[in-house]
Image (cartoon, rainbow, N blue to C red; front, top):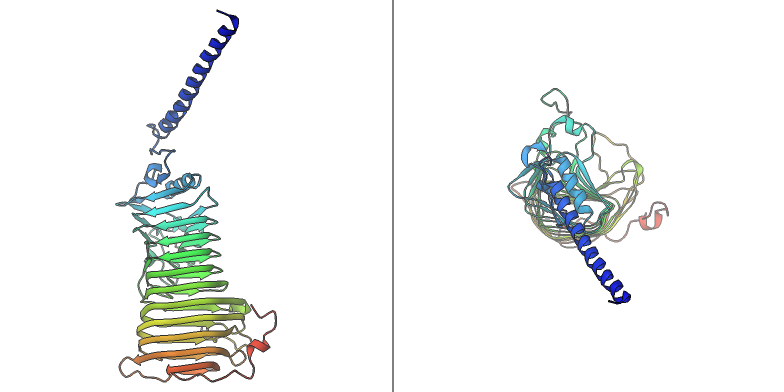
Length: 437
């Protein structure tokens, strides 16, 4: 055999054995990875190669008593490092989870699928750091929470005026946490889930863009304090629809920095209706624009649609519409209050948040106190208001005339109390550049 042929044969042999060794090595690595995670000393059996991360495979017990917080964080970390991962909270379990943050950014979009129940602790030790939120999703790009499971904040332990004593004599913090909060995130979807008995707000979006909430439910009693259903602040391009909101405060509250908000097919009640504000507290600047609420039902509430601002604030609320809303047993359906005050007395101030271009159209149903209450500032009158086809009937003998003060605009077919034209001190001309949005 020639030397060149011998060299060729030796090369082929080396190549074959090399490839076999490489394949065996890779297979051995995979086997060793799985064995390490399912060894007798481990409490879970997690497949690192699956795109589905089940919290029970990372140690969550789901018995309603064991603290599963660390297992949830481990599951999040695993899902966050995968492409298009699903974090699964399976049915037929009740997971006790303390305050935690699911932090991004992650490698790809995450599907957070909740089929079981997640409950908050009520012992003071779990809340010793006094967090503002129970479950916090932060700095994510593409996050969907979906399922028919429930987050239960067990808020009854918090719903008293003072700090609550635990069984060992210690106390829960007086500052009650929001149940679920999204912060600084883009492309957020919440679908199908229920949040009940939150200590404070149920669902909050802060500094988020491109948000969809659909088939969402909140459930808390009418006397639960400050338990807003959905709270928005500094968020844009938000659509909330086909959802049921029952709580002890605003079914939905829209704060400063919000624009492009679309709300429709909402069933609200009990609660305080849908509110913009309160805005301008302590002289702050507030800007809200392009808000539309339509095709909704509001019942057993203090208000239907409300705009509330503090004296002394600056900024503007503009381009807002409320249309085709059915009303049942609501105290004051249409409410604008530029003298808002949540304490016994507030000092009179001249500046205020300017309210303009607000339309109320086709609101029908019953009220128990006053059909329309528009209390606008002497120095900052409301302009370009529209009351169109407002047909509200009193419950029993509680018929009262609508109240309008410094409120300018047009009206037709129904309630009439607006002043025509524009005010002598038109805020669109008198606002300084710093006061405008």
